[in-house]
Image (cartoon, rainbow, N blue to C red; front, side, top):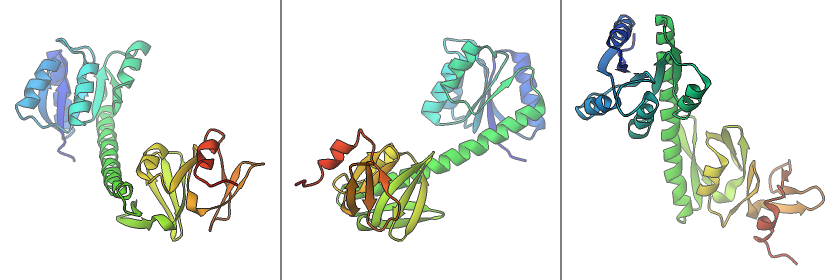
Length: 254
């Protein structure tokens, strides 16, 4: 059983004690209990180190639970689960903005508490790993912007160096981006906007919302059907109407 550190934010003492007992029974460690946002800040500044927060929405003090959740997200990047009696649409809409890792309605069941905490921590761990991968990718890709004619992408457990000369095009696929190169395909969890900002624009051009191409690899531009033929690639790449003019500016046209 995990020895996860849980921080309870609840302004009703009896309810807070009930939550604490349930958590201890489930094998968790309760490191703090606060009835207000001010108390949360005080305990955190005193050195309390939680892994996750169970947050009531209507609490004492100047800050409500949603505002405290926002503070936790921005300052600590820790997961928050709302544990509340409020399920109206207005409250839900406000709570969603903080991107909570769970929403449990009172009265709660211990199995719901356990399942939601475990899923929240798993998701948070995965999100943290993805962020680290993107940070590494971002730092290395910045080297390409600064003159290095290569980028690095994460492939399984290693970083692979791709020469700019060997990269044909980049393609978006939902929450992932695929680098199509001379030596194979590499997929990372990212966005086209982020990738576009990291690739040196003297070599690459956005030609479609789902495609970035190496302009040195373009063999032909078909005006009729609006597609590109790329060197070393069998399939053609579409050109989005809003990208066509900027693309043509990169060529010496006769």
